[in-house]
Length: 637
Image 1 (cartoon, rainbow, N blue to C red):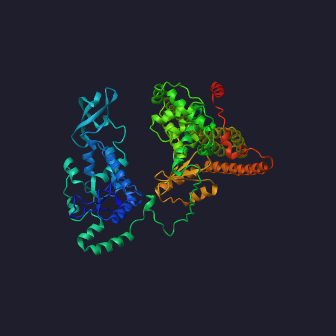
Image 2: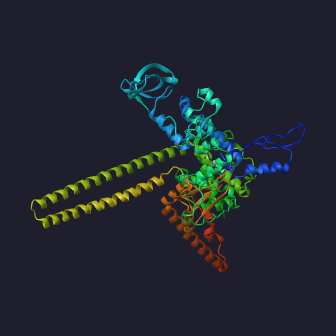
Image 3: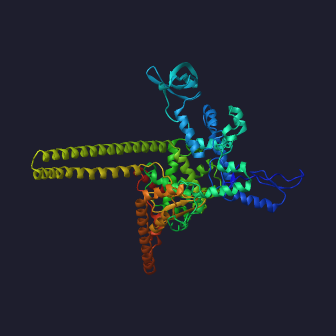
């Protein structure tokens, strides 16, 4: 059951004497019933507020329904704990007085060290490793041995053997800490001490009687002891006094739990991100996804680069045959046809050619809309008025095209190729770092040995001045090539980092702030984008001052903002350089537009001379020659 501001919340009981024919109001996800409409609205508004916390995963800042979904998913994840681990894990949980983090660490360490019945692992057999399962633990202490069953096909046990612990090999931990944390929350009815649900305790034979030391008051928290010895009011007063003497909180913690303290460093004020998009705010995510895919796989699509602003302007334009949009749709549709998948079979049934041209692209687009059940405005596109389609629907169609394109064999092969290249570059980078470390170690050893020889030479009566001069000359001669070599390696390291960045498979968010807003930076766009937690709102920062203010406003006492600040600091130079470059381009564009406006008033220049209409002049320079020639023939016919 979701927590209200991190405290238990109880649902209302049904009204008494409820007539089956009586008209009432019911909350869909809680099944609560109300006679009064205003009470129903008040309750519903409470559930819509972001004050709820998922009891199992600990996620906060959720609506009640989101918390319910989160609890359901977390419960499903908790069920993924291997069955053979259930009993030993529940034994360690029952009546433990440790806090959640310490209890997870204790169980995780115990599972890594101890072996128990039902555990699947590997063991040495005839000079090789084979999968097996512990059937029985024989003996105890140093003489412990294990009866194992060798696992064959279909996980069937083919034979058994008795092995020592040294012959058993564990490849990895049976489960992760995060899964243990979710399992503990899901399987217990209370904490401090932790008590396992009664049905689970009976199912796995977990003792339900508390230990003797706990019955006598030992092992309980101070607050519980005082509740047993005195009145609740006295206990609450004493517990408040204890809270004042509590050990300081160990940061970082969950961001929403961070409270300002007098000696905290002063955080700068975070300015709200700009939201002046031309497309609807809810469609900005689709716009970014389509543009980033076209930029990442431009060579595969035979689609030359274009700016995000050009795509945004083209999407909002009312003209039907804009070259930029026609080229994007044609490239994506041809990719789907060449894949010979569902779309290819769909157009084959309509006896269409297996090639999309700049003239026939709207017919193929209508086929795609029909296949994906996007029926809205399909007649408008079929009549040749694509420009009149709402902007949000245009982006929805492009998003569906990109989703289908991602699943094609060509894109998957390209992704595999890039992953292989990334792994090779990363291995090369590690090898260079290893060699550099070894060379530095060798240089230090040679220098140490040389100093010792010089010291011995002085002690033997050699000429100290001459030896120092010789050592200095040798050091200068040695440092010259070493310095050049170091510069070369530094240059090579930077080159490898650039190559790794160029071969990146996908763009990932830099991190989240305390309210779970995600921050995105795209290499080809000089803005830092902000996505709301529900992905319905977007904004961006476009100046270095805004970037600095954002970094200065992040509280490193919180887990999310600490991680976000680390990423922003890591990529600060790249982001700030891109932001300043874009700002210069925008300033230059405004100056040119102003000059064009002044000139047009005298000579009536055509509006397309303005940089803001550059999307009208897009030319796909990466299209193969034969394709361009064919398109000319299509236009001629």
